[in-house]
Amino acid sequence: MPTSRDRSSFHRRVGGKEIHQISILELTNGKTLADYTAAIKANQPTPWAVGAGGPNAAGPGQTIDATVTLEPGNYVLECWVPSPGSMLSHMAQGMIRALTVTAPARGAQAAASTTSAAEPTPDVHLELFDYGFRFSKPLVAGKHTIHVMNIGTQDHEAAIVKLAPGKTMNEFDAWAQSGMKGPSPAEPTPGLAGLGKGRTATFTTDLTPGRYGIVCWIPDVKDGKPHEMHGMVQEFTVAAK
Image (cartoon, rainbow, N blue to C red):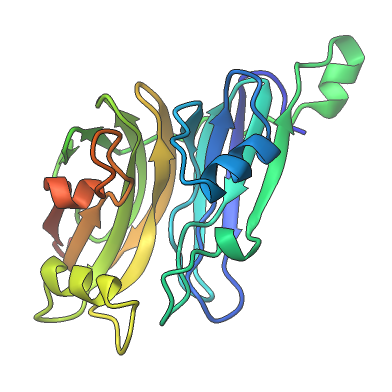
């Protein structure tokens, strides 16, 4: 179990035939996994479940590394991605589990049990806000460590896809809304799952030249609509070095 204010690195390699993510939520106010699942089934709001990051959607065979900081407490690991042809999320199909972060040990025991990951050195910063994204500089092809900060008032995510030649984020959104039927206009690339207000995390990616999109699908706390419908989606170009 991770320890107090543990900087944990999550390495996600996707097996099987579908896209998956690891979305990490901190359950505040003494809430548990049972409380969370009951609220979701009853379609009740969960303001006490706060995004802590995690590796966002990856396709079969892809890997993503994300580094997050966790306080002691109860957490949930889940996947909100739906199966192709169905709007039922993997979480609803059982892809959810509890995680407990404990207070740190002391002395010799602490040295033997520490699990903290080294702080990665970012070369790009990405701000999430209501409702948009701001990169510190244009992205070029190659490996990057991207530091993400949510400066908005709500949870936000950075879901990133590489668009197929000639395709747009409008076409990708229409494909997603159709239940992911037929060929996808884009393929998932490393990104970061939902982050709460004021939180930070990092992820690594290896980009190739082309046209990309970044989007947040987290529901708005006021009207329940995905932030994408509030304009939190944009396209960008990754140039060759």
